[in-house]
Amino acid sequence: MPQILRSSDSDGRVVLPDHAVRSGARTTADGALELESIEIGPGHELVFESNEPLRVSVGRLEIADGGTISVRAPLDLTVAQFVATTPSVVVVGPDGAPGPRGASAGSGPGGRGGTGGGGGPAFGANFQFDTISGTFIVIARGGRGGRGGDGGAGGGARQRGGNGGDGGPGGDGSAIQIYYQTLAPDTNFQIDTAPAQGGEGGDGGPGGQPDGPTGLPGERGASGKPSTVVIRQIQT
Image (tube, rainbow, N blue to C red; front, side, top):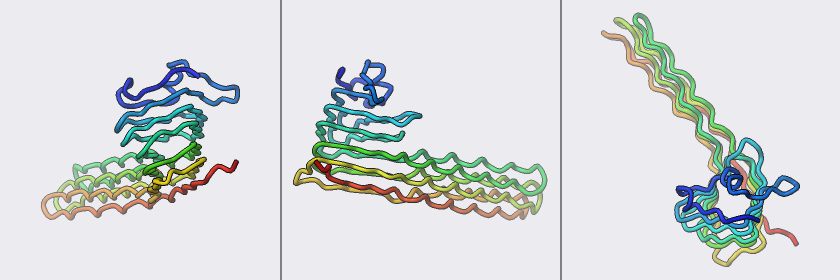
């Protein structure tokens, strides 16, 4: 196994697999990325980000208070020695883009705002640790829906403003599995799997002057499906 990766050496973030590849980390015959040690400082972040599923094996992973593991790819992570007291695991899909604003009319009613983009789904993740201790926080959900676009302005007397676009739907959650060999007596799991909210509807556009009515606001998008988090002891 090669060298230690430290967040303090890379602006507070270790991004895998990029940083590991640049450091010459070894890949096993079955395609797993193998690292000797990763150290994440206070408030820093370990990010798993890839267009392909990741399999990562770490000899020692140390996360200082306020450190975060962010999962942005399908992940299988095995840690032989896990040292952390208040780690956060965040498995959240990307947020949807906002909808475009409706066209403003030179004459006539304003255009309707565009629908917000849907939030992306969260990625599935499996974690395997030797020992978990302290407060272990898991936040798992899809991305929030994008806000609907505002309606365009009406043009001319008594012309209605465009209606606001509807918000995009929230993304669906995923399945998270956390395996451990032992739990310290002070272990406390805090799990947040609240569904991703749909985006807010856009505002109605202003009416033309004089006396043009304002357009109607758009509807909020639907919420996504919640994630599931399963915590199990490894059976030996």
